[in-house]
Amino acid sequence: MNLNKLFRDENVMLQCFTVGTAAFFYLFSRETVGLKYYIKFLTKFNENNEPVPVENVLKFRYHNILDDMKISEWNRKYYDLFIVKHLDPVFIGSTKTRYGIKIGIPEYFQHGTEESIINSKILIDKKPVKWNSAEGNAFLKSLRITKDAQKFIIAKMTNMCDSYYFLLNSLVPMLALVGYYSGCSRIYNKFKLHHRPISLTLTLHTVMGFVFIAIYVFLKDGLYFQYEKVAEDKVFNLGESYIIGGIEYYTHRIEKNKALRNLVKNGHKYYTVGGNEMSVWRMKTLPDTYKLQLAKERLNKYSTDKELLTPPPVNPNPHPIL
Image 1 (tube, helix red, strand yellow):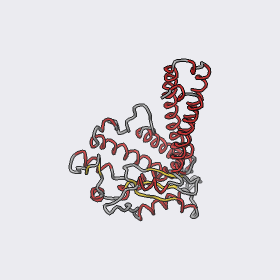
Image 2 (cartoon, one colour):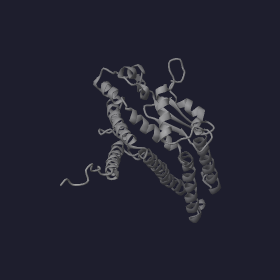
Image 3 (cartoon, helix red, strand yellow):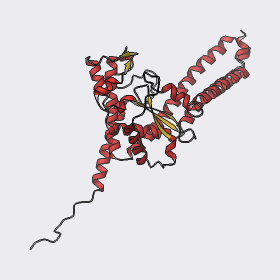
Image 4 (tube, one colour):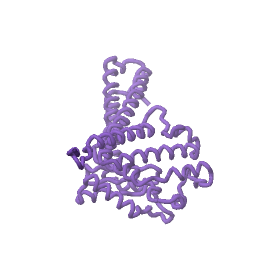
C-alpha cells in the first residue's frame, strides 16, 4: 500500500467526509426513520418472544405527568412508553420530528412488591440473581422505587426528548472529523510533509487523532450535561413532589449501584463505594451523589421561598381589649 497516496490531502478529506456523514446518518436515522428498529433492539421480550407490556398503572402515571407538563391531547399521540431490557430508563426520539418519542422504562418500575420483582426474572451477567444472598437481598430492596421517583425520571427523560439534543448529538462526530481534517491539512501543507518521510505524516495523524478524540468526548459529554441540567430544572419547576421525587430517585440509583458493585463481575471497576458509576477518562453524566445534593438544595430553596410567599396569619381580634 502506498501510504503517501493514502494520506494525501484530498484522500484524508474524502475519508473524513465519508466517516462523518455515515456517523451522522446512523445517529440521526435511529431516532427518526429507524426508530421502530432501535426500539425493538432495546425492548425487553418475555418467554413467548413478545414485548413485555406496559401496565395500565404506569400508562396512567405518564398521563398525569403529561398533564403536569401541559402537553396537549393532540400532541400526546407522539409520546409513548415501552419496557426496556436494561435496569435504567432511556429516552429515544424527539418532539421536534414527526416520529415522536419513546421512553424506555425498566420492568421493575411496574412491580410494587418484592415478590413481583423476583418473578420478573432479572438477569445479572446473564445469570439469575440469587435473591437469598446478602448481595441479592440488598439489590432487591434497592429496586423498590416510589411513585414520585418514577414521575421525576420519566418527566426528565421526556424533557430530554423535547429539545434538539438528538440532532446536535448526531452532528458531534462530523464536527470532530471536520476539525481533524482541517488541522491535519493546514499542518500538512504548511510543512510540505508530502516531500518528507512518511513517518512524519503518520505522527501528525496519530497526534491529531488523539487530540480530536478528546475534543469529541468533550463535546459529546458537555452537550449531555447542558441538556440534562435544563431538563432537570424544568422538572423541578413542576412542583415540590417532583423535587422530592428527584431526591428519592437518586437515592434509589445510589443504593442500586452499591448493590450492583457486589453482584456484577468486577463490579468495583464499574461502581464506586459511594454508589456512583466509575469514570476513568470520561464522564458521561454527573455523579449521582452530586445530583442528589443538588436536588436536596433545590428542595431547601423551594421550602424557603414557600415560607416567604406565605402571608402571615390574620389576627382575628385586631383591636386591643380595654
